[in-house]
Amino acid sequence: MPQVTTPPAYRRSEPDARRLSLIEACARVLAREGIAGASVRTIAVEAGVSAGLVGHYFPGVDALVTATYAHTGARVDAALKAAMAKAGDEPNARLEAFVTASFAAPIASPELLATWIAFWSLVRVRPEIAALHDEQYGGFKGQLERLLADCGLPDAQLRATAIAITALVDGLWLELCLSPHELAADEAAAIARDALARLTWKAPATG
Amino acid sequence: MPQVTTPPAYRRSEPDARRLSLIEACARVLAREGIAGASVRTIAVEAGVSAGLVGHYFPGVDALVTATYAHTGARVDAALKAAMAKAGDEPNARLEAFVTASFAAPIASPELLATWIAFWSLVRVRPEIAALHDEQYGGFKGQLERLLADCGLPDAQLRATAIAITALVDGLWLELCLSPHELAADEAAAIARDALARLTWKAPATG
DNA sequence: ATCCTTATTGGACGTTCGTACAACAGGTGC
DNA sequence: GCACCTGTTGTACGAACGTCCAATAAGGAT
Image (tube, rainbow over all chains, first blue to last red; front, side, top):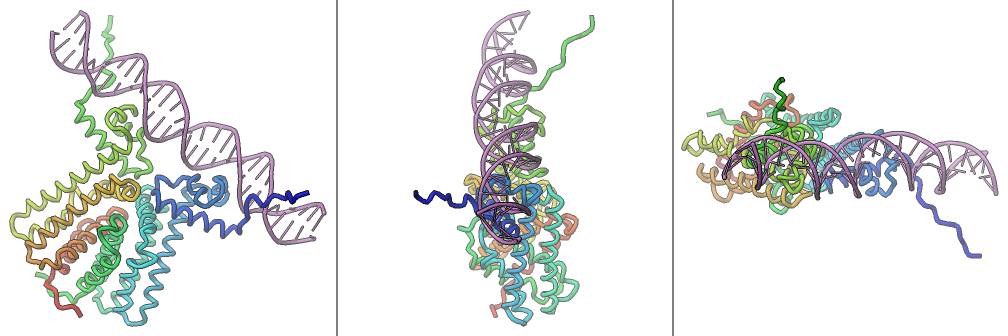
């Protein structure tokens, strides 16, 4: 009699690992199809599980998207910190590393940027996403202000300069995502570096 | 016997007017609910017509959204040109007017910015939206390059400077939309003005 | 080898989606 | 006042949506 024992129909995962795989699948779907395509079934197929399982780990698809934002934000934050740490102790080098990290892997990925746009599209609609955005933006701006202060920028200019640099980085990042054929990552980095130097120049009196 | 003639159940519109009202309703829905909420029925209710009428004017909801992007883009472009024209003939004044127009009515409206984010979220998914984006972005950047040239910026710096300024404006515009309580329109305009001056400063040699 | 826990499946439910189309009715020309 | 044109409505249809839950089975414990 031949061996008729069927192979396992599915494999179990540790809850944390499965949860993470769902979050990563959600991020991939958001990057590929945008927020409108991020349905429970699509995400489940992407993760290689049944649709019902999503409900087992998250109270609803909204919660999964929110968790994906938090996770993605943490990844970006870690990448920024890593780039900064790698730059050493010199304040200006740290600042430049922090700013240009957005135009190198893993942040410069078009997929990540597309995912991020999906989150932006939710900020006005969902309060918990707005809270996460404020946290993320405030964290970025706060680190930037600290770095600028270390570089000797006067306190009175910290806020405005940090906002300007953040806007510049976001805008370049955005364009990189929307038209990668028109703007390359290394050119974006070069532009950011030059703009950073100009924006932090010792200010001549206005007029 | 009392007057029993019923009042008209609906009013006809000229096709062009009705078409425009659908586009404007679509823009309002995009601003309020994002792309995920822009269904045929929601837009129809917003426009005060039946759902079926949308199909009478557009082959599908995608076409309506695309038309809304084109219309919104034209409005923004017109507002930019108007601000520039109002500034007179002096090149530097025209440049500054062009850049800061994004932080005054009608462009600075949070609703318009939210609508714009909805379009961004479609760029990677829908080629016709990507084409409209490239057109819009190229137009903006082109005008900026011309203005910068008029202000005496060397040709070699035109492209990079225009990209930097565009990114800055987009980033400030974005933050204004996402967290209006953290960044006011007039502060964004002031930051843009200052950054513009710094980015167009006569370049000292690198190093 | 058997039991137990629970991760996982698959299907049912009601809702909303986009689209198509027959019937209705406002407005204009006669 | 009548007839034509067509803008407009309302409905119907299948597909996809989010959510729920009973049944199943994987994998470690005993």
